Length: 363
Image (cartoon, rainbow, N blue to C red):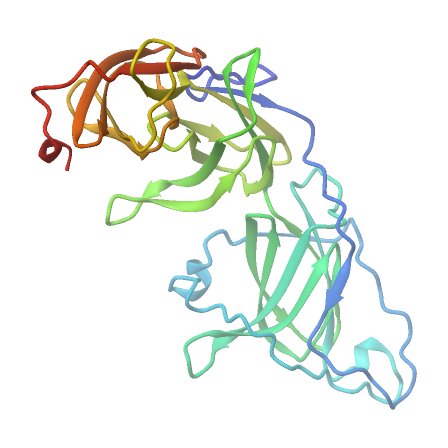
């Protein structure tokens, strides 16, 4: 069962999550690197220093769904290849206003009230028109903090990525210098798991993050999977469905967690489970018998987990179970109970032969 609470008196998101809002999400230290598809100018008059992005520049808000721009799903349209692009040579005066193309400076913030991000951003500039394959052509790309692009006059799409947060904007370029600030409206989430407040889980735990909407097949969109405890994920400011697995069997906890713009949301999901090790023995406390196959059943007879070996271990949700051991053509059974945090060995006596369970019933 989960408990949830937000700092600053935010209400509980789910009975299964402990959620707290921390300070503004820090940018990770990633060295700034720009990669633009262009040819270096070898001839022509020297260029004057370009104008740098102004933190007080006009803010452009993201046009949230890319479908609003394209009237079609984004994934099939965005090509992966970086296409060659050569900016036009400057005219004789060398001033940006006289260039055959324009210069675009870009910066991004998490929210209107936060400082510009200095690292961790990925900028992609796409043409607005599609090629013969029905894909948008990638004109240029930059990674790091602020970005600078030289572009021919025309209409472009700016895709700004920050972790799993993103925004798409449309811009019309002329022959002048443009300086724009993108507001991502994004935050982050840090996920942890435990058996209770004093017993954190750090191994054999993973988190998957899903969107809240269902598709026509009744499935949620997977945003990111395989996260470990303590991982920080950058996301658009929305509510997400978190699935947390402890072990590989039936200890699964779910919670809906809200990511706030410019904030780091911390969520801890609590499991009611324990690790159980099975042994087939001839007597209590005896040596485990090798070459044994195991099936753990729910009270209703459903198979929860199966394994082969002398000492198989599983993480099982709290509850009642029946175990079937198969060795040398014979079946043995017993019942056991799992309590939260009660890691232990469960011994099945080789004398506890089952007369009602047949191998066919376990297939």
